[in-house]
Image (cartoon, rainbow, N blue to C red; front, side):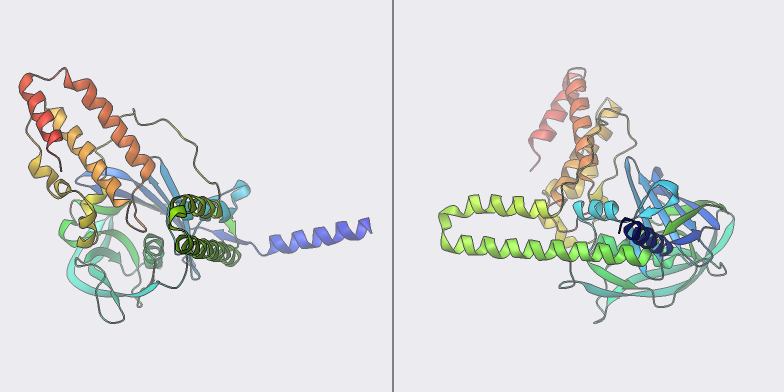
Length: 381
Protein backbone atom coordinates (compact mmCIF):
# COMPACT_ATOMS: atom_id res chain seq x y z
CA UNK A 1 0.00 0.00 0.00
CA UNK A 2 2.84 2.38 0.83
CA UNK A 3 4.54 1.62 -2.50
CA UNK A 4 1.27 2.21 -4.36
CA UNK A 5 0.77 5.55 -2.59
CA UNK A 6 4.30 6.68 -3.46
CA UNK A 7 3.87 5.61 -7.07
CA UNK A 8 0.55 7.42 -7.33
CA UNK A 9 2.08 10.55 -5.85
CA UNK A 10 4.99 10.51 -8.30
CA UNK A 11 2.66 10.02 -11.26
CA UNK A 12 0.42 12.87 -10.10
CA UNK A 13 3.43 15.10 -9.57
CA UNK A 14 4.79 14.28 -13.01
CA UNK A 15 1.45 15.00 -14.64
CA UNK A 16 1.24 18.32 -12.81
CA UNK A 17 4.70 19.34 -14.03
CA UNK A 18 3.98 18.15 -17.56
CA UNK A 19 1.18 20.70 -17.81
CA UNK A 20 3.75 23.44 -17.59
CA UNK A 21 5.16 24.83 -20.78
CA UNK A 22 8.65 26.15 -21.33
CA UNK A 23 8.36 29.59 -22.88
CA UNK A 24 11.53 30.89 -24.52
CA UNK A 25 11.75 34.63 -25.00
CA UNK A 26 13.64 35.87 -28.04
CA UNK A 27 13.29 39.64 -27.61
CA UNK A 28 13.70 42.02 -24.68
CA UNK A 29 12.23 45.53 -24.99
CA UNK A 30 12.60 48.22 -22.35
CA UNK A 31 10.24 51.20 -22.27
CA UNK A 32 10.62 54.38 -20.23
CA UNK A 33 7.60 56.13 -18.71
CA UNK A 34 7.77 59.91 -19.04
CA UNK A 35 5.55 62.69 -17.74
CA UNK A 36 6.45 66.34 -18.37
CA UNK A 37 9.98 65.27 -19.32
CA UNK A 38 10.48 63.52 -15.97
CA UNK A 39 11.09 59.78 -15.80
CA UNK A 40 8.46 57.89 -13.79
CA UNK A 41 9.81 54.36 -14.17
CA UNK A 42 10.36 51.60 -16.68
CA UNK A 43 8.45 48.76 -18.31
CA UNK A 44 10.46 45.73 -19.38
CA UNK A 45 8.88 43.18 -21.73
CA UNK A 46 10.09 39.77 -22.86
CA UNK A 47 8.48 38.40 -26.05
CA UNK A 48 8.57 34.94 -27.63
CA UNK A 49 8.22 34.13 -31.31
CA UNK A 50 4.62 33.10 -30.51
CA UNK A 51 3.82 36.54 -29.03
CA UNK A 52 3.84 35.33 -25.45
CA UNK A 53 4.87 38.36 -23.41
CA UNK A 54 6.06 38.80 -19.83
CA UNK A 55 5.65 42.43 -18.74
CA UNK A 56 7.43 43.87 -15.72
CA UNK A 57 6.31 47.31 -14.60
CA UNK A 58 8.45 49.19 -12.10
CA UNK A 59 7.16 52.56 -10.88
CA UNK A 60 9.12 53.66 -7.81
CA UNK A 61 8.73 50.82 -5.29
CA UNK A 62 5.57 49.31 -6.77
CA UNK A 63 6.54 46.40 -9.09
CA UNK A 64 3.96 44.45 -11.08
CA UNK A 65 4.27 41.54 -13.50
CA UNK A 66 1.81 40.31 -16.14
CA UNK A 67 1.86 37.44 -18.61
CA UNK A 68 0.01 37.77 -21.92
CA UNK A 69 -0.69 35.20 -24.62
CA UNK A 70 -3.60 34.13 -26.84
CA UNK A 71 -5.62 33.20 -23.73
CA UNK A 72 -5.43 36.68 -22.23
CA UNK A 73 -3.45 38.52 -19.52
CA UNK A 74 -2.83 37.41 -15.94
CA UNK A 75 -0.91 38.92 -13.01
CA UNK A 76 2.03 36.70 -12.09
CA UNK A 77 5.08 36.48 -9.88
CA UNK A 78 8.40 34.81 -10.66
CA UNK A 79 9.24 31.92 -8.37
CA UNK A 80 12.32 29.74 -8.09
CA UNK A 81 13.60 27.82 -11.10
CA UNK A 82 12.10 30.33 -13.54
CA UNK A 83 8.52 29.29 -12.81
CA UNK A 84 5.69 31.79 -12.99
CA UNK A 85 3.00 31.67 -10.32
CA UNK A 86 -0.35 33.43 -10.42
CA UNK A 87 -1.80 32.68 -6.98
CA UNK A 88 -0.07 35.27 -4.78
CA UNK A 89 -0.04 37.80 -7.60
CA UNK A 90 -3.80 37.47 -8.06
CA UNK A 91 -4.34 38.11 -4.35
CA UNK A 92 -2.27 41.26 -4.63
CA UNK A 93 -4.23 42.49 -7.64
CA UNK A 94 -7.54 41.95 -5.89
CA UNK A 95 -6.24 43.62 -2.74
CA UNK A 96 -5.37 46.74 -4.72
CA UNK A 97 -8.76 46.78 -6.44
CA UNK A 98 -7.52 45.56 -9.82
CA UNK A 99 -9.16 42.95 -11.98
CA UNK A 100 -12.82 42.17 -12.61
CA UNK A 101 -14.75 40.41 -9.86
CA UNK A 102 -17.74 39.32 -11.85
CA UNK A 103 -19.51 39.60 -15.19
CA UNK A 104 -22.60 41.52 -14.04
CA UNK A 105 -21.25 44.96 -14.91
CA UNK A 106 -18.49 44.07 -17.38
CA UNK A 107 -18.61 46.21 -20.51
CA UNK A 108 -17.20 45.12 -23.85
CA UNK A 109 -15.13 47.61 -25.81
CA UNK A 110 -13.81 47.38 -29.34
CA UNK A 111 -10.61 49.10 -30.44
CA UNK A 112 -11.24 51.74 -33.10
CA UNK A 113 -8.09 52.85 -34.92
CA UNK A 114 -7.15 55.43 -37.53
CA UNK A 115 -3.81 55.38 -39.33
CA UNK A 116 -2.13 58.75 -39.77
CA UNK A 117 0.27 59.77 -42.53
CA UNK A 118 3.10 60.61 -40.11
CA UNK A 119 5.97 58.48 -38.85
CA UNK A 120 8.87 58.71 -36.44
CA UNK A 121 11.90 56.67 -35.39
CA UNK A 122 11.97 55.17 -31.90
CA UNK A 123 14.95 53.17 -30.60
CA UNK A 124 16.30 53.14 -34.14
CA UNK A 125 13.14 51.64 -35.65
CA UNK A 126 10.71 53.43 -37.95
CA UNK A 127 7.06 53.30 -36.91
CA UNK A 128 3.71 54.63 -38.15
CA UNK A 129 1.32 56.75 -36.10
CA UNK A 130 -2.18 55.58 -35.18
CA UNK A 131 -4.95 57.19 -33.21
CA UNK A 132 -6.94 54.70 -31.17
CA UNK A 133 -9.95 54.78 -28.91
CA UNK A 134 -12.32 52.24 -27.46
CA UNK A 135 -16.03 52.28 -28.18
CA UNK A 136 -18.95 50.33 -26.80
CA UNK A 137 -21.12 48.29 -29.11
CA UNK A 138 -23.60 51.18 -29.21
CA UNK A 139 -20.84 53.44 -30.55
CA UNK A 140 -20.20 55.36 -27.32
CA UNK A 141 -16.53 56.23 -26.94
CA UNK A 142 -14.66 55.32 -23.77
CA UNK A 143 -12.50 58.41 -23.71
CA UNK A 144 -13.06 61.85 -25.18
CA UNK A 145 -9.39 62.04 -26.15
CA UNK A 146 -7.69 59.66 -28.56
CA UNK A 147 -4.57 57.75 -27.62
CA UNK A 148 -1.66 57.98 -30.04
CA UNK A 149 0.55 54.99 -30.81
CA UNK A 150 3.62 54.53 -32.97
CA UNK A 151 3.60 50.97 -34.32
CA UNK A 152 6.16 49.00 -36.30
CA UNK A 153 3.78 47.21 -38.65
CA UNK A 154 6.56 45.13 -40.22
CA UNK A 155 7.62 43.52 -36.96
CA UNK A 156 6.89 39.84 -36.42
CA UNK A 157 6.12 40.71 -32.78
CA UNK A 158 2.63 41.88 -31.81
CA UNK A 159 2.17 43.46 -28.39
CA UNK A 160 -1.24 45.12 -28.93
CA UNK A 161 -2.80 42.32 -26.81
CA UNK A 162 -0.57 43.43 -23.91
CA UNK A 163 -2.11 46.92 -24.01
CA UNK A 164 -5.60 45.42 -24.08
CA UNK A 165 -4.74 43.04 -21.26
CA UNK A 166 -3.40 45.75 -18.96
CA UNK A 167 -6.55 47.80 -19.57
CA UNK A 168 -8.59 44.81 -18.43
CA UNK A 169 -7.03 45.15 -14.99
CA UNK A 170 -7.59 48.89 -14.81
CA UNK A 171 -11.34 48.74 -15.41
CA UNK A 172 -14.10 46.16 -15.41
CA UNK A 173 -14.11 45.78 -19.16
CA UNK A 174 -13.19 43.48 -22.01
CA UNK A 175 -11.20 44.90 -24.88
CA UNK A 176 -10.96 43.58 -28.44
CA UNK A 177 -8.21 44.74 -30.78
CA UNK A 178 -10.13 44.42 -34.08
CA UNK A 179 -7.15 43.02 -35.96
CA UNK A 180 -4.63 45.83 -35.45
CA UNK A 181 -1.19 44.24 -35.12
CA UNK A 182 2.41 45.28 -34.72
CA UNK A 183 5.07 46.22 -32.21
CA UNK A 184 4.15 49.29 -30.15
CA UNK A 185 7.24 51.48 -29.81
CA UNK A 186 5.67 54.59 -28.30
CA UNK A 187 2.30 55.70 -26.96
CA UNK A 188 0.61 58.53 -25.10
CA UNK A 189 -2.45 60.83 -25.05
CA UNK A 190 -2.75 62.53 -28.43
CA UNK A 191 -2.64 66.09 -27.06
CA UNK A 192 0.37 65.49 -24.81
CA UNK A 193 2.12 62.82 -26.87
CA UNK A 194 5.44 64.69 -26.80
CA UNK A 195 5.57 65.22 -23.02
CA UNK A 196 3.55 62.31 -21.51
CA UNK A 197 4.32 58.96 -23.06
CA UNK A 198 5.98 55.57 -22.87
CA UNK A 199 8.69 54.84 -25.42
CA UNK A 200 11.04 51.98 -26.24
CA UNK A 201 14.65 52.76 -25.32
CA UNK A 202 16.23 49.36 -25.92
CA UNK A 203 15.43 46.42 -28.20
CA UNK A 204 17.71 43.42 -28.03
CA UNK A 205 17.75 39.64 -28.33
CA UNK A 206 16.94 37.55 -25.29
CA UNK A 207 17.70 34.04 -24.11
CA UNK A 208 15.47 34.20 -21.03
CA UNK A 209 12.78 31.60 -20.43
CA UNK A 210 10.07 30.65 -17.93
CA UNK A 211 7.85 27.68 -17.15
CA UNK A 212 4.15 28.40 -16.94
CA UNK A 213 0.71 26.82 -17.22
CA UNK A 214 -1.38 29.85 -18.13
CA UNK A 215 -4.68 28.03 -18.61
CA UNK A 216 -4.47 26.48 -15.14
CA UNK A 217 -3.57 29.85 -13.62
CA UNK A 218 -6.48 31.63 -15.31
CA UNK A 219 -8.88 28.96 -14.09
CA UNK A 220 -7.63 29.24 -10.52
CA UNK A 221 -7.74 33.04 -10.53
CA UNK A 222 -11.27 33.08 -11.93
CA UNK A 223 -12.38 30.55 -9.32
CA UNK A 224 -10.91 32.75 -6.59
CA UNK A 225 -12.62 35.87 -7.99
CA UNK A 226 -15.94 34.05 -8.23
CA UNK A 227 -15.60 32.80 -4.65
CA UNK A 228 -14.79 36.28 -3.35
CA UNK A 229 -17.68 37.83 -5.25
CA UNK A 230 -20.14 35.20 -3.98
CA UNK A 231 -19.01 35.73 -0.39
CA UNK A 232 -19.18 39.49 -0.76
CA UNK A 233 -22.74 39.36 -2.12
CA UNK A 234 -23.73 36.99 0.67
CA UNK A 235 -22.47 39.45 3.26
CA UNK A 236 -24.25 42.32 1.51
CA UNK A 237 -27.52 40.39 1.72
CA UNK A 238 -26.94 39.62 5.38
CA UNK A 239 -26.19 43.27 6.06
CA UNK A 240 -29.38 44.40 4.34
CA UNK A 241 -31.44 41.98 6.42
CA UNK A 242 -29.87 43.22 9.63
CA UNK A 243 -30.42 46.84 8.64
CA UNK A 244 -34.10 46.24 7.90
CA UNK A 245 -34.77 44.40 11.14
CA UNK A 246 -33.01 46.75 13.54
CA UNK A 247 -31.98 50.22 12.53
CA UNK A 248 -30.22 50.70 15.82
CA UNK A 249 -27.85 47.84 15.05
CA UNK A 250 -26.78 49.15 11.64
CA UNK A 251 -23.43 50.50 12.74
CA UNK A 252 -22.30 47.34 14.51
CA UNK A 253 -23.61 45.17 11.69
CA UNK A 254 -21.70 47.22 9.14
CA UNK A 255 -18.49 46.66 11.05
CA UNK A 256 -19.13 42.91 11.19
CA UNK A 257 -19.91 42.72 7.47
CA UNK A 258 -16.88 44.78 6.50
CA UNK A 259 -14.65 42.57 8.63
CA UNK A 260 -16.08 39.41 7.09
CA UNK A 261 -15.78 40.79 3.58
CA UNK A 262 -12.20 41.85 4.23
CA UNK A 263 -11.39 38.40 5.56
CA UNK A 264 -12.74 36.84 2.37
CA UNK A 265 -10.20 38.84 0.40
CA UNK A 266 -7.41 37.24 2.37
CA UNK A 267 -5.02 38.82 4.83
CA UNK A 268 -2.50 40.02 2.28
CA UNK A 269 -0.79 43.29 3.05
CA UNK A 270 2.73 44.19 1.94
CA UNK A 271 5.38 44.67 4.61
CA UNK A 272 5.72 48.31 5.55
CA UNK A 273 8.99 49.87 4.40
CA UNK A 274 9.76 53.38 5.64
CA UNK A 275 10.59 55.29 2.47
CA UNK A 276 8.80 58.59 2.83
CA UNK A 277 11.92 60.52 3.86
CA UNK A 278 13.80 59.49 0.74
CA UNK A 279 14.24 61.99 -2.05
CA UNK A 280 11.87 61.31 -4.92
CA UNK A 281 11.38 62.73 -8.36
CA UNK A 282 8.46 65.09 -8.85
CA UNK A 283 5.33 63.31 -7.66
CA UNK A 284 3.22 61.49 -10.23
CA UNK A 285 -0.31 62.84 -9.72
CA UNK A 286 -3.34 60.75 -10.66
CA UNK A 287 -5.40 63.97 -11.02
CA UNK A 288 -3.24 64.94 -14.00
CA UNK A 289 -4.87 62.20 -16.08
CA UNK A 290 -8.44 61.82 -14.78
CA UNK A 291 -10.29 59.82 -17.48
CA UNK A 292 -13.78 61.16 -16.73
CA UNK A 293 -15.08 64.61 -15.79
CA UNK A 294 -17.56 62.88 -13.49
CA UNK A 295 -14.73 62.05 -11.08
CA UNK A 296 -14.03 65.73 -10.44
CA UNK A 297 -17.25 66.03 -8.43
CA UNK A 298 -15.61 64.02 -5.65
CA UNK A 299 -12.59 66.33 -5.40
CA UNK A 300 -12.16 69.73 -3.73
CA UNK A 301 -12.39 72.64 -6.16
CA UNK A 302 -8.78 73.68 -5.73
CA UNK A 303 -7.63 70.37 -7.25
CA UNK A 304 -8.57 71.60 -10.75
CA UNK A 305 -6.32 74.67 -10.72
CA UNK A 306 -3.33 73.84 -8.56
CA UNK A 307 -0.74 75.29 -10.97
CA UNK A 308 -2.60 78.57 -11.41
CA UNK A 309 -3.44 79.09 -7.74
CA UNK A 310 -0.04 78.41 -6.20
CA UNK A 311 1.66 81.54 -4.87
CA UNK A 312 5.14 82.59 -5.95
CA UNK A 313 7.75 82.30 -3.22
CA UNK A 314 11.16 83.84 -2.85
CA UNK A 315 12.35 80.39 -1.83
CA UNK A 316 11.96 78.61 -5.19
CA UNK A 317 11.86 75.10 -3.70
CA UNK A 318 8.70 75.71 -1.68
CA UNK A 319 6.36 75.92 -4.67
CA UNK A 320 7.14 72.44 -6.06
CA UNK A 321 6.87 70.83 -2.61
CA UNK A 322 3.59 72.61 -1.92
CA UNK A 323 2.17 71.53 -5.29
CA UNK A 324 3.12 67.91 -4.62
CA UNK A 325 1.59 68.02 -1.13
CA UNK A 326 -1.73 69.45 -2.34
CA UNK A 327 -1.80 67.25 -5.44
CA UNK A 328 -1.18 64.05 -3.49
CA UNK A 329 -3.98 65.03 -1.07
CA UNK A 330 -6.27 65.46 -4.10
CA UNK A 331 -5.23 61.99 -5.32
CA UNK A 332 -6.40 60.51 -2.01
CA UNK A 333 -9.92 61.79 -2.70
CA UNK A 334 -9.88 59.70 -5.89
CA UNK A 335 -9.65 56.55 -3.76
CA UNK A 336 -13.39 56.94 -3.11
CA UNK A 337 -14.02 55.81 -6.70
CA UNK A 338 -14.39 52.14 -7.63
CA UNK A 339 -11.33 50.64 -9.33
CA UNK A 340 -9.20 53.72 -8.69
CA UNK A 341 -5.57 53.50 -9.79
CA UNK A 342 -4.05 55.51 -6.93
CA UNK A 343 -1.10 53.84 -5.18
CA UNK A 344 -2.25 54.49 -1.61
CA UNK A 345 0.99 53.63 0.15
CA UNK A 346 3.07 55.72 -2.26
CA UNK A 347 0.64 58.64 -1.99
CA UNK A 348 0.71 58.55 1.82
CA UNK A 349 4.52 58.46 1.73
CA UNK A 350 4.56 61.52 -0.53
CA UNK A 351 2.17 63.40 1.80
CA UNK A 352 4.21 62.54 4.89
CA UNK A 353 7.42 63.61 3.17
CA UNK A 354 5.96 66.96 2.13
CA UNK A 355 4.41 67.63 5.57
CA UNK A 356 7.83 67.02 7.09
CA UNK A 357 9.44 69.38 4.57
CA UNK A 358 6.87 72.17 5.04
CA UNK A 359 7.15 71.95 8.82
CA UNK A 360 10.93 72.12 8.71
CA UNK A 361 11.14 74.92 6.15
CA UNK A 362 8.43 77.13 7.66
CA UNK A 363 10.62 78.81 10.29
CA UNK A 364 13.41 79.33 7.76
CA UNK A 365 11.20 81.36 5.40
CA UNK A 366 11.04 85.11 5.56
CA UNK A 367 7.86 86.78 6.81
CA UNK A 368 6.48 87.31 3.29
CA UNK A 369 6.83 83.66 2.26
CA UNK A 370 5.45 82.47 5.60
CA UNK A 371 2.35 84.60 5.13
CA UNK A 372 1.78 83.36 1.58
CA UNK A 373 2.15 79.74 2.67
CA UNK A 374 -0.18 80.11 5.67
CA UNK A 375 -2.85 81.97 3.66
CA UNK A 376 -2.77 79.44 0.84
CA UNK A 377 -3.18 76.42 3.13
CA UNK A 378 -5.82 78.16 5.27
CA UNK A 379 -7.99 79.08 2.26
CA UNK A 380 -8.06 75.69 0.56
CA UNK A 381 -11.69 74.55 0.28
